[in-house]
Length: 237
Image (cartoon, rainbow, N blue to C red; front, side):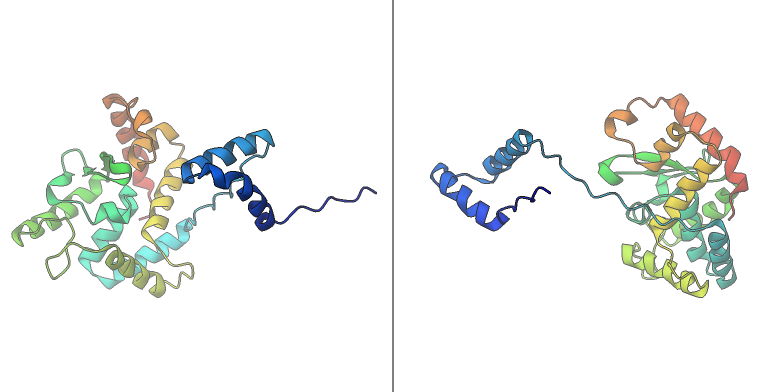
């Protein structure tokens, strides 16, 4: 049986290499390039840690969760949670929605400078339009700027929204909790289960790169809206 050759410790090998490199006075960029070429010479592949799958709540959990929200009768909390569920927006995007970003005639919300500093539109069901418009009118009367503001007339914080969601998750006895991102993943996963093609989900999800967004025409956005409107009637909330 062939004896496995022991490797020199990384620290000791670094000291050996430093003797040869010190006179070169290398900076970070040089060392980075050097070890990239060294990996190629030794045919060493870069190993990437596998991405963790997102936690997606079960449909039964979402129904149970929203039932607790409904029974609490807090109108603004209900609207915040429904907006997250229906649109799949990130919490950082939700708290920055202005009153004039909502297009009630097309049932869409403009997300300005979302992740990657990109603008996009997200849909909401026509059945949600009236209650959202009533809320917006109430906010206009209060001279608010944002669609959702706290009782101190300030926009919500990321932490504030998470605390709202956590409160109802505890009441619904959902051990894993509920975060804005979990609601986002629930919507996108649910749309896929309804048979909607990725190309029609992407314009809303905000996952597309700038280059791929450029290939979406106005027609594809209309098609995406049509498919969303068709299946959202079956949404569990």
